[in-house]
Length: 286
Ligand SMILES: [Mn+2]
Image (cartoon, rainbow, N blue to C red; front, side, top):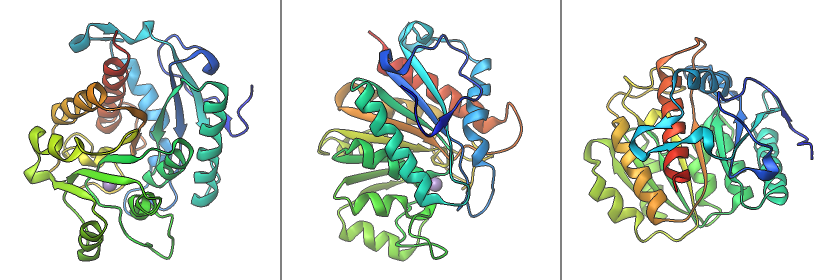
């Protein structure tokens, strides 16, 4: 089967399988359109794949070689430049096609501005959405656009999906009030702890979609992202949280978003690539 809206680009440095046989299927979404501060997330998927050249496929912590797992890379979505809504629709359609082709495939998106996560959520229909992010993204609209990256969590919440947010350290008074009124739980990056995370995520209904906007990390780990914010989470804090979630909750999709920059080997892409290999390792370990 051909996917209508994808094209091949730089591949992961792993032996790859066909999507119909794969346990993990990767889709790049090289999109930035509503990015409001630093452009460049359109290069995110390529930068992440290239940064995997620097990594060992053997993930030390889990004693698993992800080169032995069934991974497929669909390449990149053919985005509609300047049209976030149609690009979101293409993400949704492509992931629906994928689940039709291979219901056991676990999709992983590499982005790309965060707005397109909405397409993945609409395709996969989780009951909860857990996001690591510096920002609430709970605006009703931003710069006149309800599909702006600053609105993605709001659109997801309006689908009746429960939300929990970690790493938050930037938002408006209206967003805080919306979170309060909509039963959205969140922890300020400053107050983050593993125990606090468990308390918020334990009661969430399953299945769950997991999203990492890389700006959740401390800015030193992700200087090349759309809207960097000082004072974020440590790499191992996020890994530890993901390990617990993968172990204890039914997760049906994952993404790593908002990787930007224009330079091969940039710090943000190296952080994202390491996160990708760890996630596949923890999810795929026997
Ligand atoms: Mn963000």
